[in-house]
Length: 176
Image 1 (cartoon, rainbow, N blue to C red):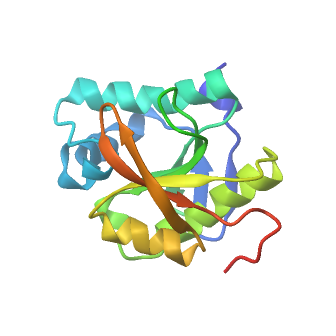
Image 2 (cartoon, rainbow, N blue to C red; image 1 turned 90 degrees about the vertical axis):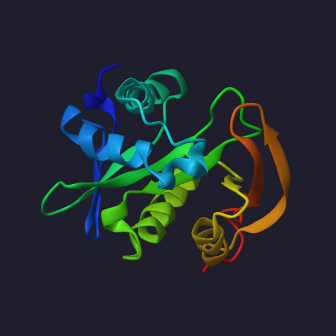
């Protein structure tokens, strides 16, 4: 499977597409920063960032779905990653989001996470979804609440450590 089979969507001001090598510097800057603490980082080494970026595409190959690179629809500037994922050591399928510094505070994560939830429920047929958020990641917890999710417990991930499990409303429940 090549990255070209990762579906591309444009909605609102955002494009959802496969990661590209041209995204690497922005992705590496995210991975090397304190912003990556929410995903087990920072990952300061370029090789680590490259492997993680490659893993975004690999997840599509192995699971048939995965996270997209979020890009500005007009400029194609990479703004973060979002989408459904289910790594081997995760408690259940998740809607995950990370935004790069340039996108912080602009509603990109909210817009992208809503898109990813609609995709997971409408296209993939999921009936439930979680988001795993590190304690202290107040912005992600606030976004999860805004999406209607409720914190229902913790999961002790072997590499990332303790994360909170936020349960999203099902497709049949009222949503914000």
